[in-house]
Amino acid sequence: MGSINIKDIAIGFGEVKIFEHMSLDIAKGEFIVLLGPSGCGKSTLLNAIAGLLEVRAGQIWIDGKNVTWAEPKDRGIAMVFQSYSLYPRMVVEQNLSFGLRIAGLPKAEIAARVQKAAKLLQLEPLLHRRPAELSGGQRQRVAIGRALVRNVDVFLFDEPLSNLDAKLRNELRVEIKKLHQNLGNTMIYVTHDQVEALTLADRIAIMDKGVIQQLASPHDIYHNPANLFVAGFIGAPVMNFLDGKIVRENGSTHFIGDDGVSIDLGAAPLPARENQPVVLGLRPEHISLVASGGAGTVAGTVAIVEPLGAETILWTEIPGKTVSVRVDGESTIRAGQNLHLRFDPAHARIFDKASGDRLVATIA
Image 1 (cartoon, helix red, strand yellow):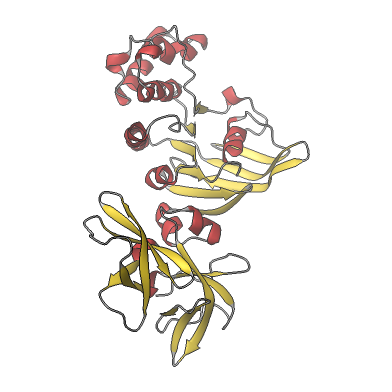
Image 2 (spheres, one colour; image 1 turned 135 degrees about the vertical axis):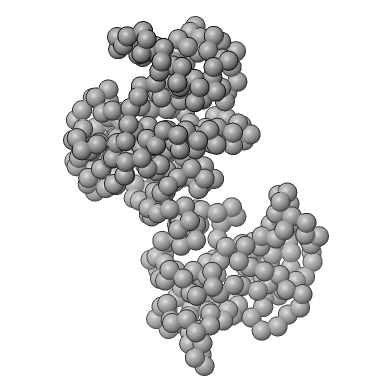
C-alpha cells in the first residue's frame, strides 16, 4: 500500500532554507497528517514527496524505490489540491475519466474505475452534471474521485477542505475517514485545522519552522505534548500555562507559581531541579469548580462565558493570570461570578521554561 521514507532531505529557495535534515518514515496504509501554522513547511514537504519540488540533498523512497529524481507520474501517487481544478465543460464522468483516457487505458477498465470511485464517493447520481451544477462539497468529492481512479498506493491531500464551509468540512471529513478505512491506502494529509488532524490521523506530525516538533498518535499529541509549542498549538482552548517552580516539602512535590498559586502534586518525584524555572500546563477540562475554598484551591472571577452547546468555556481571572475552564453546557455560571478552582495534578504537564521541552510524561 506504499510505504514512504524521507531520508535527511534539504529544500530551499535561493538563500532561504525550508528544510535541513528532514526525515520521516510512513508505514504502508498509514494516515499521516502534517499539521502546523502557515509557513511551517507542511505543503512544501508534500510537494517534495509528489515530485513538484526538487530537493537539494537527501532521498525520498516510495514503496522501496528511490524516487528522489523521478517524475511525478512515475511515483505511484495521486494528489488532491485545495482548489478543485475541474474541467468546466466536462460532466463529472468525463472529469473522472479524462486522465485515464489520456493514458490510453481500455474503455472497459476506465468505466470500471469510474464506477467504483463514483460509488465510494456517492457521485453516481451526479455523473452527468457539469461542475457549475455541483455544490462545493460535491466538486471536492469529484476532485478526490479523479485521484482515486488512478489506482495508486499513495494519496496526497493538500488542505482539500479549506475552501468549504464548516458543515461541508465536517461531512467530507467523515467521507475521507471512511475512504481510508475502505481502501487502506497510505495517505498524507496537510492541514492547519487541528480538528481535522485529531479526527483523521493515525499519527500527526506537528511542524514549526521546517522542523517536526512531535510525531505521535492524536492521543499522545493532545495528552502528552513534547514541548510548549505543541501544547499551545493543539486544543481549543489551548492548554493553560502557569510560570513557577517545583519544590519538595514534607515528602510532597509542589508547584509554586510566580503569582502565588500552589498546586500539590502528591508524592511524585521532582520532575526538575528544585527551584528550576518551569511552566505547568493543564487542559481546560482538568480544572474543576468547587463550591468553597480550601487547601489546593484557587479563588477566581469569571470574566467571560463562552457557550458552545454541549459545553461551555469559562475564562476565569486568578491572581496574575486568566485561565480557561471547560464545564458542562448546562452550566448556569455567569460573568462576574466568584468561584474556586481545583487543578488536577494527575493531568499536569511540566515544561522547562528555558527550552520549552516537556520534563516528564506525567505527574501521576
